[in-house]
Amino acid sequence: MSRPRIVDAKGLAKYLGYVNDTAAMQKWVRSTLGVETVKGRRGHWDLNAIDAALDRISKIPGRERDSLDPYEAWKNGEVA
Image (tube, rainbow, N blue to C red; front, side):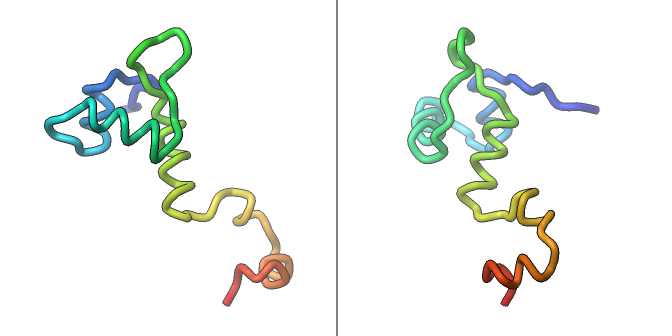
């Protein structure tokens, strides 16, 4: 089963695990994650943008780092 790409505030709260206050959640998403609502759809969020922002702040390596060969990764200081 695929998930919807665009969700409203209640759907986003469920996705992020927020229980009560969707207004606080929306403020956190805007300020901490830096993700705005979808243009032309007030109160709707793009889950792909949310996932990318969460990956960015959690320091999970992206595809560009995975594509480096071992020497380039070592040279760039990404391998201990």
